[in-house]
Length: 104
Image (cartoon, rainbow, N blue to C red):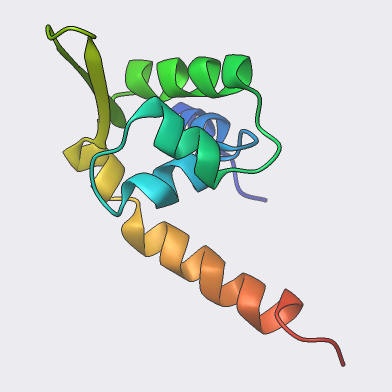
């Protein structure tokens, strides 16, 4: 039986929360505004998106940059830690395509 260390548990808590993989995957394309992320993820409320982005920021996966313009412009990007999840998301996508991508 495998014991899970706290770092693995912590990573699973962040990555496996509903919507987080979608947000991270979309941000792999580059910087996005809140409205662009919301438009890309059907079914997520603005409140939930704001909560998830804050959690991902706290986990140092997402970087939030505020530009003091009028109106204020806020951009979300992935940190190096966030971009490092590409392999994991690619593997998850391949697995989903293999097992859920077609009906037998």
